[in-house]
Length: 268
Image (tube, rainbow, N blue to C red; front, side):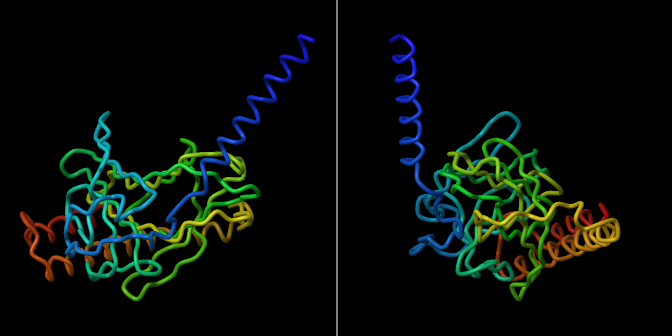
């Protein structure tokens, strides 16, 4: 009798957890196309996050302090500060990677090391093998799921007509069927470290393991990575300078931006 009672309690707990997981619902707005920034001019920094990035929360992390953002930018491109913005092409030459909108995060180490991050919690679909997303990064980026860093492998390079970005994939099969928090992160590297994200998908297809490329393929990937890293630095500087020439940004001067770009390129 006692064993049956304990078993009934466990069954009840498991059933309750299952109901809670189902109630959590799927991830939302993974392509950022649900943005509603009507009435906000380009370069504004006061768009409510619930309108600009529905389903997501945004944070700036400096040292041990995490600041939640109630407002984010709309076509607001940083030349040195940290921040989170949604872009739709009004910040040319920054363009969406896919569709009308993309999310862009800026981490920085110029005025204190600050990480920019957006997150949301949802149910990873049953049968999920991998997480894919399109990314354009000045330097580097991070993705975590359930608090664990996901190793993202470059799969394909694409162009949006202004610059090239990369389709990445990472193995998340261990999380299938679980309610987890997904975080997209622009770390404070080389400041400003602008990272644009778009078209995030939970896929039933596996990501190729690095070993499957072989030594020759790995060597090619390393050479391509080094080339892309240099190219990314040049592109980042070009993008920032073109933006500066088209917009008046408080406290920013083209000579300062040129110096920053020179400093960036000295890293390679």
